[in-house]
Image 1 (spheres, rainbow, N blue to C red):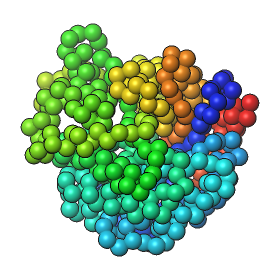
Image 2 (cartoon, rainbow, N blue to C red; image 1 turned 120 degrees about the vertical axis):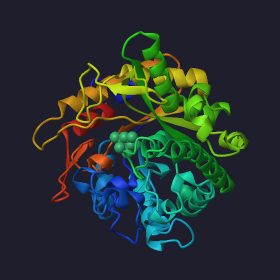
Image 3 (tube, rainbow, N blue to C red; image 1 turned 45 degrees about the vertical axis):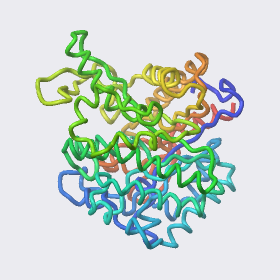
Length: 437
Ligand code: FCB
């Protein structure tokens, strides 16, 4: 790596992230079924119909995994708690084994000097709630706040930070408009409802955690740089629309008490009745904002219904996901969010990393270069005055990459999905040297 820890301010946190469904093994420990299990069981949704029943078997191997995180020299570990593991039906009965698991997991982090950075929901909705409409149902905000209370009554005393929901855009748009993620809908009314309720859910969970006395509460949003395919007004408008529903909608709700008008142009007719009355609730004060950043999209106009655009193939080098490598976008978003939305609020890069067709014995030089260029973009943002307080790599382990199954490898640690053996990659070793320096 070109960077070293001493390039960053005192107290700057380096961490790595995972999420529950992607690594734990949902077949273990009395977890309820999630909508990812049923989505994956439906042919055509997930590569080879792969699911998270075993995943990385982190449920049984978390001590070894946290040993790896600590040995790398990380300061913190970003993990998520599964709603369906804690409350198998989503409401009511609590699975004691599930709570015990997170209790042990958090203690194991602290024993190794890793600060726990929790996310309450990283997409594993209990099926009983999916049956009731999931994020389309306004009541989910209350169900989710109850879950927040149950899990944080148990582990909240040991959290470094907590965010309710990982990437509202994926929960709302990707899952209800594009149908790429569970529940696999393609419906604009479902999308508008889910995009709004993901924010009311966020807000009620924040309130519930404040009521328990928790501090350092934030939100984690994902961002993609929106590049018009050319400089025609049509292409510029198309890219602006993409930027609106991807990057500005959720920030508008969280920090400005209003959704952007160019997004409402498309979504307003489909929004839940009385949505305006929720905007004050949605703007709960936060202690930090996390940004997940991976890539940019090249956007061109089409003559179809709103949002009237296509994603086009871009010219830049790409990762195994087919995602263009564009570190300038990370610098752009850190400075733009700071200037236009968050002011003095601390920012964190809560996810950044690349998938690569890694094989054991082959050095992942591409990942080292990717991480180096993105960390450099973050360093530049700090030099420009952005109050960036930490950087989290996605991901500690190769894991279940959702609809793309186990083939897309984002890990700093290689996982053999037959034997479940863990082997640190060259990028792991490079980071550990950079963090020690
Ligand atoms: C993010 C998700 C994470 C992983 C990475 C590659 O959108 O939060 O679970 O899938 O992308």
